[in-house]
Image 1: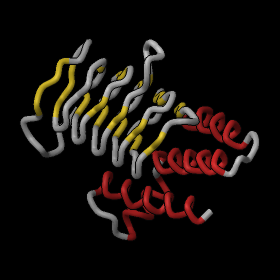
Image 2: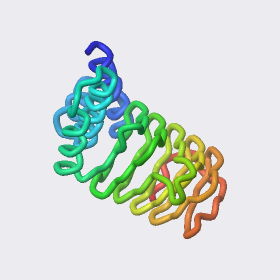
Image 3: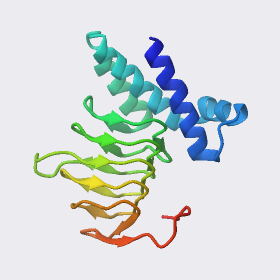
Image 4: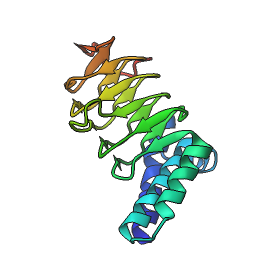
Length: 181
């Protein structure tokens, strides 16, 4: 239980930083009390605890609740980093054993999974995934990269890059500040 509580605090701090740029008490309270993203992450942390402590059926019940209430599907073997931020959760599917880094932003209706059962994506820290983007297969998305809206990523994306199009073409980021998707 101590680990679950620590993970929830860490998530709140990272989400507050991602949402507001700081982690003061007011920002933390706002994230915990009003953010759908925090509720999704908290449910997912509870699912992880249910699996760790071998509590029968609890993971399944929480997954169904998460899908029905929040409109998001996260597989039981997915690893979520700290402060993963779902700007819009509806239609997000993260499957298999995908690994999601810290402070990754999902802008809605995203798929992170496999197309041919050949492996799942690894998304490094501080990546933004635009609305409708698909990341498929055993690819690695480098830290601080931006995936454009509706992009279909089928190959590795180096750190500090932008991926756009179908299939995605990759370009170096021209700035290191926040880029609107």
